Each structure stands twice: as C-alpha cells, then as structure tokens.
Amino acid sequence: MENAAEAAENTYRVALVAFPGIRAFDVSVITEVWGTDRTDRGAPAFDLRRVATDTTPIPMRGGMALLPDRSLAWLSRADLIVIPGLDDHLTPAPTPVLEALHRAHARGTTIAGLCGGAFTLAQAGLLDGRRAITHWNLVELFRAHHPQVTLVPDALFIEDDNIWTAAGTAAGIDLCIHLVRQAHGAEAAATIARSMVTAPFRTGTQAQFIEHPTPRADRDADTLAAVREHALRHLHEPLTVADLAARAGMSPRSFARHFTAETGTPPLRWLLDQRLAAAQKLLERTDLPMPEVARRAGFGSEVTMRQHFASRLATSPRAYRAAFSTSPVSTGAAGSNPIAR
Image (tube, one colour):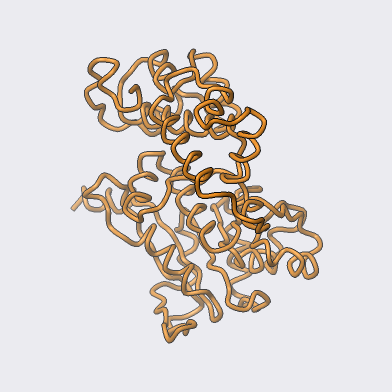
C-alpha cells in the first residue's frame, strides 16, 4: 500500500482545462500525450484529468463531447495545466476558469495554451506584458483584441514566466512533446513521439508555413533529405556547411538558402539541434565519460558541449545527466553506439 501511495504521489499530474468552445483536435493531442499509458516502454506515469467548472458534459464540434472528471479545485494539485485551442477564437472562458488560472500561475504552476488557447490566457490577463504566439493566421485578430501582449509572429512555441503558448495545430503537438522533454528528458519525449509517429522535435519557425512559394523541384527536395540523413549518420564527424553543400551538389550559399527554406532553420543551427539531441540521449542512456559523449555527438570537446548546453538548455551536461539518467546501457566499443557511426 505504501509503495502504491508513493507511486501515486510521484505521478506527474496534468490538468486539461475544459469549457464550451474548446477544439476537439487539441483535446485529442493532450490526451494522446499524457493520457496514454506507455510505462511498459519506459515512459513516465501521468495522471491526466479533465478539469471544468462542473461535471456537465461539454459538447465539441463534430458530435463529440468531453466528460469532466475533476473540478477547478484540482488545479492546485496539478504540475502542468494545458488549455486547448478554440473553435471560435473569441469565445469567452468562464470567469471561474480565468480566476483559477490566475491562482495557478501565482503558485508557480506551468501553464500552456495550444493555438487559440493563447486567447484564453490573454483573457485571464496572464499574457499582459509578456511574449506569446498563436496561429499565424490569427496574429492580427489577436493583436486587435490584446494589444498589451507582445506577440512573436513566427515561433512554433514560446515561453515567458512559465507560461507557454504554441502556434496552430501541429505546433501544439510540438509544444506538448517539448513539455514532456523539459520535465522528463529527451528519451521520454522520444518514446512518446515514436508512439505517435511524430518528430521528437521540429526545427525552424512558423515562418516556413506562412508563405507558399512555388515548390522547388522534387529532385532538390530529395537531395536535401538525403543530405540530412547523411548528417545524422555522421554527427560525430566535423561536418561543415561546405561539406553538406558539396554532397548536395550546390554552392554553400545556395545550399544554405534552400536548406533554410525547406526546414525553417539554417544548416548550422540544424546541426547544433541534432548534436544536442544526440548528447542528451547519450547522457540519459549511457555512463560514457563527458569527453566521449562530446565526441560522439560531434562537439569535439567537453568545453564546447558544455557551452552549448548552457546557452541552449540553461543547464550543464552533468546536471542534465543527474536529472534524467536512466539505467546505463552497455557502452561497448566506440563504434557500437549508433550515434557514433
């Protein structure tokens, strides 16, 4: 009984805040990420609750309904609160919901709004003077109704004072996976992402979706995909933009332009993202010494890896390992780890 009680106490508690007008898609995303038991695959245990002013079924578009199972009082127990987007982005949230969100933020609880959920957070006054994001097609509407919010128009998701907002639809998935990564580490996020058949993280910004230029030839797209695959297989090597451009049969300037247009991220930034992810996985799953982790992830030295962890993740490799390390796998020879191939 004590073990069961201890396990329940250690379970990560997530509150899905529900009220009439919320989007069924976002409810499904939240439920898929935190409401599916994947502990048999090494994912953390979650306790997802559908929180509302009362237990009356909440209708959603498409003939669906959501049945709340907790009152707003449960928000005081939550580690994370997530607000779905809205079918009508100007839908007013019930006053008790807005007041409960205020109290939760004052307690220091992490709060996230998916897509039009930013409108709900703005209604509550939680975004006043803070940076936020919503779907690119809603930027002008949002600014017209909430001019006191500093809107960042091209991010996929953004955080300010422990309040997270995300751009439209798929960016909500990106944010949910990122919140898992932030709380439980890269391996937990990757496990859930693999189960959902989605990327553990997506580079670039919303800008890559706003404009719709004439598509490049399929040949160019295929070439860049092959170059990215090659880079992932050779992260431990000192890759340069010139190396990747030569492999694509382009000049470095042309390659950088096409690469950024396709991924939303410059090639060097993309390489750094992949190397950080590789290092995180090695720190979680192996007991390799820091210099070897740095070598296999392509940083060259522990000092360089430490600098990038500090600037991008606001932590050190050693602190990250202490927080997220699992039982180490056999490290074997340098070439036995797939990241070192």
